[in-house]
Length: 235
Image (cartoon, rainbow, N blue to C red):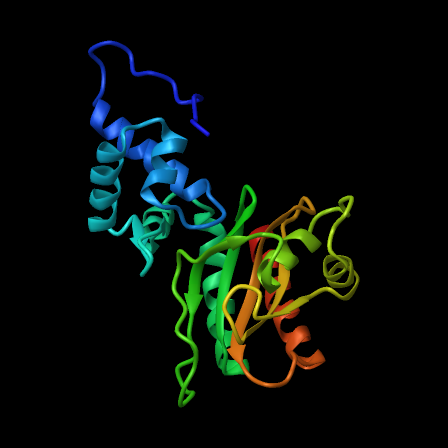
């Protein structure tokens, strides 16, 4: 379906090429799944050859990435650029608590925020004293309805009609869990970060590989870190 909501540039003002490139980036970022060039062209209304040049340029800059099947998704560079405008105070408040959580649990800890129907990782802290741990990077995006961090973001808000039972359970318990919903075999445990106004502004999470589900102790540790981040936002 062609996206006709993009306003035309005023005559003689701005760069049409840049405008097209940004439109392509917006379409890729808004998609819940990776897209082929033909799909991007259809959604933007651009010719396929123009779309191809745009996505290859964005790929060169690290703003989109291409998988083995030639499909495109947002790249980690986009999250790096967004750091200047997406909740800088939240990231600043979260960083030391994520670092402490990573050391206490021996697991990679990260901060996730909601953007539309997606959950996006904006900051990561890895444990420094473990022999091995999962490498995770800012820019990871997945549907907010999947994965521990997404479920925690939803649990931090009011109940919604038709929400997953796992969200209701996480809201009552204070933390969410998932197994293999975003990355096969990966387990996560996450808790919402709530600001002084009672609004969920993000989620603190840990990710790991293992046979056992997250324990009550791990859940309490993640929930305590999320609460500490929220408390620092109030200061």
